Length: 330
Length: 297
Ligand SMILES: Cc1ncc(C[n+]2csc(CCOP(=O)(O)OP(=O)(O)O)c2C)c(N)n1
Ligand SMILES: [Mg+2]
Image (cartoon, rainbow over all chains, first blue to last red; front, side, top):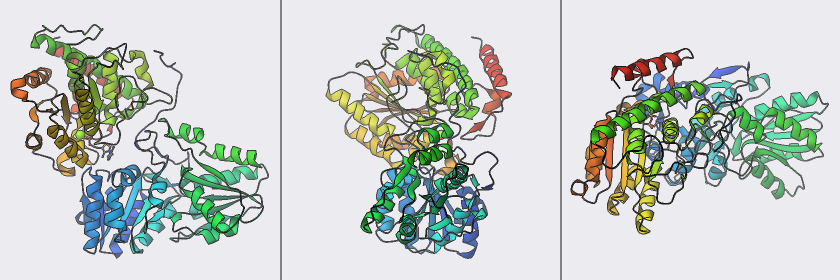
């Protein structure tokens, strides 16, 4: 039996590691505050959680509207079954848990009780993709792959606090069920620097560029923008197209951007199987384009436990790794 | 019954008082390991692990049949940690049991360690299952107990779970399955620390009356002070008595105190993630040591 040498190694830290870079501008609990605000306009909105109110920013809503908050216990099947029942009575539930438990434990309840009758239930999943170092039990690396196969379900993968704040009222207003890949706690604020507004179902060009096109969703849009700045120093001109709505997908905008001679990459905080890469790839094939696409995505593996920066480097999601990949491809 | 090849080996003839003493000492040493590991991370599930130390200790120092040098020995009893985030407590027990080197504990939760924050079988010798998604252990334990019995093994299965896991429907499916299949080789320990992620258990989901529920599901049910080593030893002795057990699976409900053994943590506001400042770790150790001296050991 070997003992590990005592050199300083990075630590896993708490269940929810921060995704903010050092010194980055952040906004506290954007989801909780946005939901509390939306609830002032819409009396039908209610909040539910499965013993993860504090960890999904639902506690902010619970404090603002205690009589409209329902703690369901650590019982995810009940969470989504009950959300369906509440929606049947005309309410608009937002139900929060971690993405892994929404996607894996409670899938059947979301599918048959919510999606099939097309109820307006909004599922809010914390720790999407690789946003915790806890290992496969908490890393929802395949949540979009699981959910993309579910008819009626809208899937939103926001980049930052701007996306989340603007998405919440639109999710409440849209018919049918939605799934939001939540970023919580001190969430980076990035898109306010761009001429951008979130529109459900729409992809947006954040910046143009002559050499490379990056199509990204979720926190990887943040990384794409940073990588683009980095690559400019190498005289590589990078365009970034942000596609926060994974389903229904804005193929028109994305195809318009990637049809041409530029190097195309997709960037997602998700497995290379069944997420943004395959969404874009299927749109390309359907349109009869012969475009090659380089995926930046998590490998089709159960991932390691460890510190998030270490893991993002290891699996190619760090800014550094993205830059290196582009330079190698050019 | 214990083939443990370390200093804590008991003989079958040891008196309950002697066994209790060994469990207490094992738990005391575990608590030091827990504080040391907690300091590495700076926070974490220290409060839970301190609270559950006697539960782990009675398993490894008194009950479990295992070989420290051969954790995969086929005739071993199986100890399943359903509550993955309690791994810090389990690692302390594995170190005391001689399965993991004590020196390795300082890698807890660090990159490339065999001791991740959330317990996983693929990482750590002596870990039977990967927890983390709560409410899995008991179902797997039912299958392990069925599989062992089916193949004529006399090995026992002990599943450790938290009170939060009583919220999950999967727990009760498994409880009914164990009764239906008459699994008297299965024992469950439930840590009732009255706490969950969002707050006190009775504010998150009222699970009481817990003992009535297990009894109604067909289990031999006992409820004890989970920090009382003597009570735990006695509960296992009752469970070993066929007259009391009557062919049923066994559950021992353990009321525990978060932070047990370190008064400054016992009285701190209960939180799923207990905050402990950098300068406090040494104070915690001193309180732990002083308390054990006060107990006159
Ligand atoms: C299926 C599942 N749902 C939710 C969680 C998130 N979670 C981690 S610990 C925890 C609290 C569960 O209660 P308990 O184990 O009694 O907590 P403790 O006593 O450690 O505070 C929750 C909800 C999880 N790990 N697994
Ligand atoms: Mg608990």
